[in-house]
Image 1: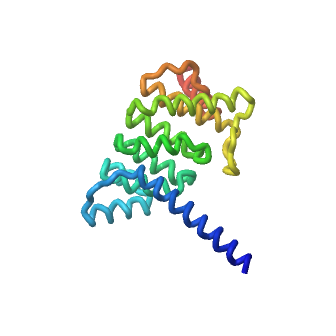
Image 2: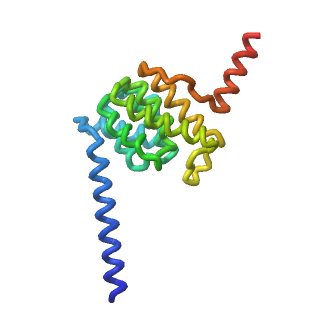
Image 3: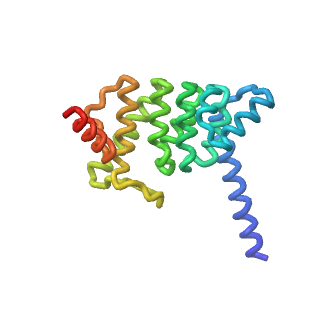
Length: 198
């Protein structure tokens, strides 16, 4: 009997926590009046990961895209949907994107968030991007080039990749950041361009 009560209490706590999390995420999703046909079309484009179609819908697709992203911001698919949101240039998405950027557990999506914020061009993103940029540079300075990976199996220079995107986003927002770290892919790209010039 005691075990059953304990299990029931745990179940109630989990349901309450999940409900609070859903409520917290709901505050980041703007309202948009859509026809049933448009809603269905956007839902199908999300399901099929039809990014060119989603981008053609622009701001109309943003609430449904945010809802999809906020269900699992640490998924690999979330990054592409975040980029779609950025291309819409919808400032309504900024609070949700900054929320994702503030959570280290969603770090796998931080590169996409930085690019989306740079596309949206909202100056309120500057402070949070600078904080995230410095955090990633801290991993590099400490010799932890990967940073925390939470079992995602990230590249060995992932901190440099994330820091680079944050730095480039800040530059696009008009902020001087000094040296932007170069990850291995960026170095290879620079070397390829140098070879083409010769």
